[in-house]
Image 1 (cartoon, rainbow, N blue to C red):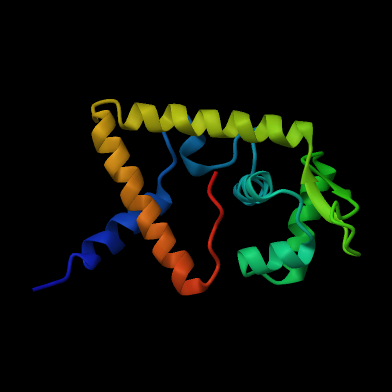
Image 2: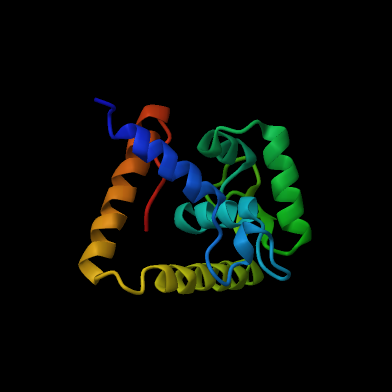
Length: 151
């Protein structure tokens, strides 16, 4: 018998290729966030100001990749560099008002798309699905040793 993880793999592959209805089919939409900026802003919002080193550790990405991402986010006015609020030497990145506004706008659009996809689901079904996704992500985070803070 084939384990159900084969089905999970296939469905995860399909999920990664889909955009939500009204969300540009997964492609960037004018005026909204790139995927990397969306994830970067989401992490900073939940955790608070972070240094390049902290971001590198959190995302398991090399510093040069994070430098490119944070530079692009700074140029777009989404984050700003500030002195470490705790008095450390490293400067940290903090989400700007514009970054927060755009993140909220992106998140609201994603939720509208999810509402359309799940229009015939009960609230209980959606809650069970969310709990399974949370458990799945927590398992990945546990194995990688990089838990993602949740609001």
